[in-house]
Image (cartoon, rainbow, N blue to C red; front, top):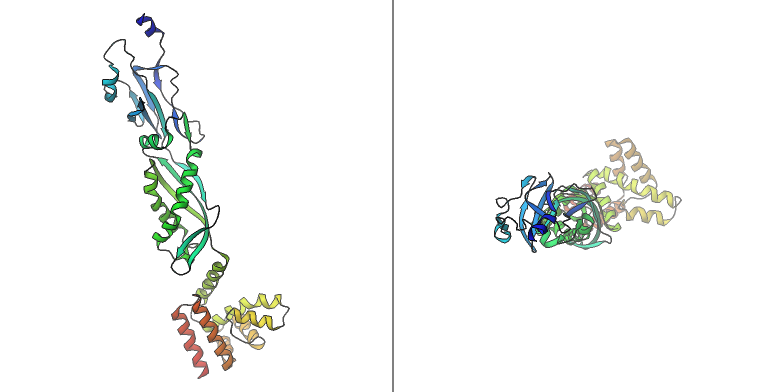
Length: 343
């Protein structure tokens, strides 16, 4: 009777998995009551690993290649299965395959602005977006910690957890990068490196490895974006007072056009932008100097300044310094140049 039962059994000679390209990370081989023939073959392709699980415990892990399943290749199970007995069931355990290839173009982003702390501006709120790629490097750990006994486990199943890890580590990554807040948008590669480094140990706890991380955009609050734009503009003109006034005049022209060319509001806009000069003849002279880019024209503008205009300009420059738009060195240089005009 035992012999007939043995003959009726179905045995598996080859165990293998061909990925279907749907983002599957883990797949359980369908046993359906069948047993693995002693001496059968396990085929593990490149970008795969296989895990044998016996009675809930991982028995062995196999990398790419063709493996003959015997007591020599699975010594852990020798004392459990008594494979030396002719009619003893050779093997009946769960077999899981894991994809170890890169899972690319995984999106991450901040659905809502997140608050971070900056040394210059205190608490600020930003939004950031990008993508990343990861792979399974420790299938045993991934099986015990994440995928478990499910028939299949896909990228979409772990996506929410990984997005959460990114969000959780953004603030720490920005602090560790040492990048000033206003420079984040211009240093996205450094930001991405810092974020990836911060995530590596967290991913390793899940049996995963972060292969690449990109930051595609960083959105600053509107008021800080304006300060950044002004800082960039000032960086372009440097310590040249003539160019500084040309820059401020160019900033004032759109305001002047919107106001119809008259009224105290126009002058207020110009002063608010730090132009610090009277509109009219000085405005025309500055515009001409900017178009011609001649040192002589810039000097003519400076001569046209009145003492009151110079004092007003100094006050506005002081405001720009207080807001962090001008550095102390830039302020001192422009102050010295204006004071020479008073002398």
